[in-house]
Figure 1 (cartoon, rainbow, N blue to C red):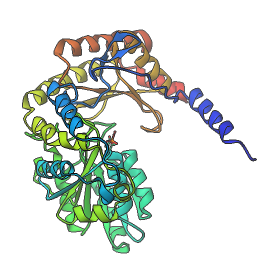
Figure 2: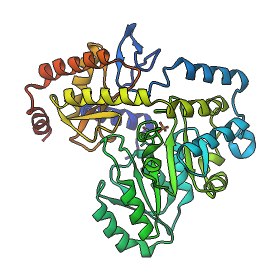
Figure 3: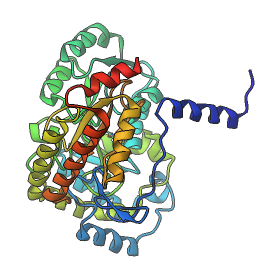
Figure 4: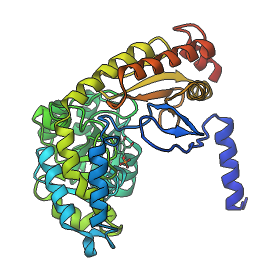
Length: 403
Ligand SMILES: Cc1ncc(COP(=O)(O)O)c(C=O)c1O
């Protein structure tokens, strides 16, 4: 029964290949909206730089200038890695989401792992939406708290679980994304706040895809709805146009993270140059109303075209458009053909999404112009017609092919 690691890895890769699930990330260079690949410029709908800040000269300049003042932080935040730039960034982020304290992380992934894995523990209960991001799932696993998954967005199921299980736990927490990253639908944060309040439970939200997009100033679903969550996780790698993540909450969250969060204690701090650019990125993001309107226009255009080639999920508030194709092989073929013709729209396959729901996920960005979006939509329609057959039959065909 003993096998060498290399052999097992090769077997697993072969299995992924034959199931159409092998990922082979292609290298791209240059601007995130119009990268160059194999010497050709293509239109990319793969980046979560929703407002075009990563492409903006102003933000690039801010990062470059900050990089001339700061290099690596040298150690974890707890040892000597907390700079004034980190603190200033944290004040800007806390203010943006209308909460008292914030702490930066190297990614939103590690922020979720920190919150769930280090602030909750044995004897606690986590109720987690079934479509929550992998970083939330991994945080739940690390926490050693009992984790019960509730049906996606189903508040009746959640209420039942709270009634059934909350009295068995010390701390109970409900955790949800606010804009679901693969389904483009929105959590009802007001109802979740009422429900958690009534059951003495904490509300933990991941606003990675809502910040910059939801609310007049891009303040996210909670601040825009007047909801104060117990803990908010945000990402800097999406609409902020940078890289990293943060955790925000009431006053106790800062010292709790500083003392208990293992990714904070045992990992080198986020680059001070990124931290130094955060206040400017936050200001740009808050002022980006024109970009938000342009983004909305692109989402509307893409949703209309995508509906002619597959089943479109979610709400037009989300800055991306998932189009279910079903079969992973068909979805990959479609995406590859589109890339050949000059438009990059990535495929989401299991384990990122449930089996049988492989999909193209179009991320819109304000740095595209309407002509570029229209051009990519034409490419999509040409390719779906060529590869998947006539309207309306596609998902059924690909599902049948899987059975
Ligand atoms: C909802 C959600 N949370 C967290 C993350 C992790 O973000 P990061 O790339 O900063 O680690 C992602 C990334 O895709 C996400 O979609």
